[in-house]
Image: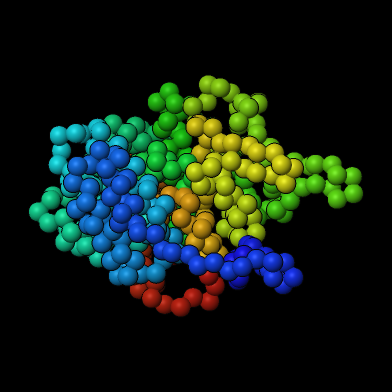
Length: 379
């Protein structure tokens, strides 16, 4: 039906002749936005909807063309849902303050460093005179810092912020992408959040799958063409067990996360479209439908979305971890902690002096602008 669309096959000519072509009309997103704002309790919905969509239209044209950016209707719906929650939590706060905060808090985690100044300028121009106030969950931040130290990591502000942003995205989206280069702490972010929630009495269990380690049939299941016998796949077994609370999952588990740690490929990700959108159902070839329960979440940990289709990108929340957000220093500090047990402190002093002397900021910046013989991780 969609010629040239990745992950789909085109209809054969003899079957295509039986269908007639039809024209599609672009929806009036401003009108949709206005109605949704009114349904969330905003009285100045007409003015705010124009500002909202002006920001998204300008962001689409002025920001760099990143694959993980989504300025479509699904993203609009998620922001409005978050803004509605903020409105009900603080009914006395002016509505333009609330919408500005919702737009900033929801979109900021996916904006790359080079685009942040442009996006901040657009918001300030559309909402003049409104202070840049983000609602920070100080209690959650403190719990994240405790869990980070328990795991033997460094509770730096940049890392803690990413963990809190992940928690905020998982409140409004049941599926999300954590995107970043290898070595930028993607796995540590969701592991620390799971640890924080478990420490807080919200038991969180995770199951990790590498979708590229198996074929699509082994991932979802397949039907034997000769015997018509159904053979379950890895993901279908995990989702069914989570849905029915089969061991090792229990009803006491408040959150159950499926972690898909591998490159996105249209061959397998397209089959997850019904899971990632509002249907929240995995449909198998055997006609079985496995719904996601409110406790279930799906997290895709990937390095890029170059091979993903726009339909896939729009279906999940995005946390983009820039190379500079965490950096190399926390790795070094965590490694150095094992030498702090030595009373005289000589190894710690020697390594610290060597690190500051040989790996100064000017040296690492110079390295980034040079070509390398082999691929290296730019942190």
